[in-house]
Length: 146
Ligand code: CA
Image (tube, rainbow, N blue to C red; front, side):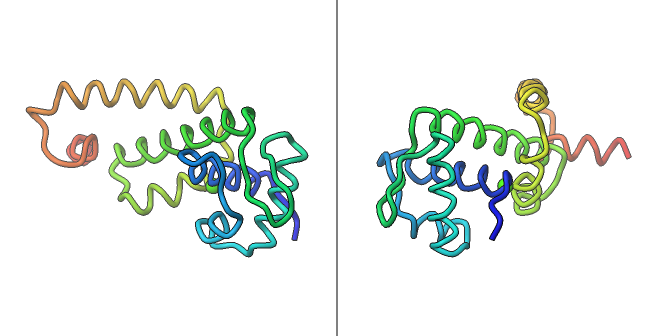
């Protein structure tokens, strides 16, 4: 199995999500969340440890370092921004999540931060429009514009 940057990001993001409240997470929980083998999580944890993102001993739990927490938070933020933008565009929730899961690996931090600002403007406008508009955020407007 080859470890890829895409997998690294997904594992780090998942470790961040699962360990946020308790500070650490079991390999089996990460494996279940990502639908991968225990050995895949274990190998990835060793790789992330090399990069300074986690503390991990074989057969032990995984804990994020400060750098890991920061990176995990940024990765989750990028993912959420993409999901929200797709939802505003009228993409159904499940599809938005699935596509954001792929897109997140190909968008630079700079573009992600610009998209986040754009999302902020969209949400501000949506809040102002709320009394006038109907369902689905901007989907209704897009449909009318077609
Ligand atoms: Ca992903």
